[in-house]
Image (cartoon, rainbow, N blue to C red; front, side, top):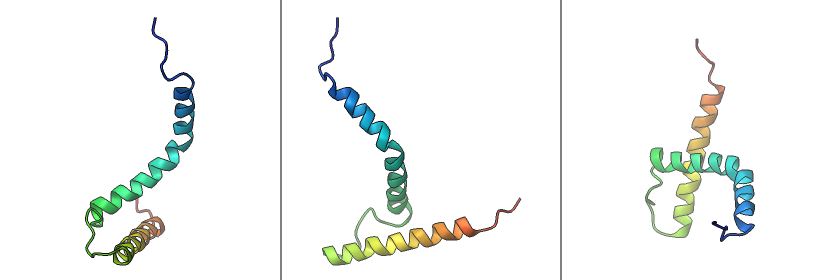
Length: 76
């Protein structure tokens, strides 16, 4: 007979993950798109301030493109 070595911790962990899964999925999608399409795999500039600027500019570009696609009329 196998008894759980996690005790009640595994049940608490699964309950917590179920609660944040939808939010985490949406956030990871944005970061994945930024890495894949907008070049955030590597920083172009050195330094915290310039790297932060690159991340903010990438977020602006992502939001502009997303808002343009949301406002675009659906063609049938």
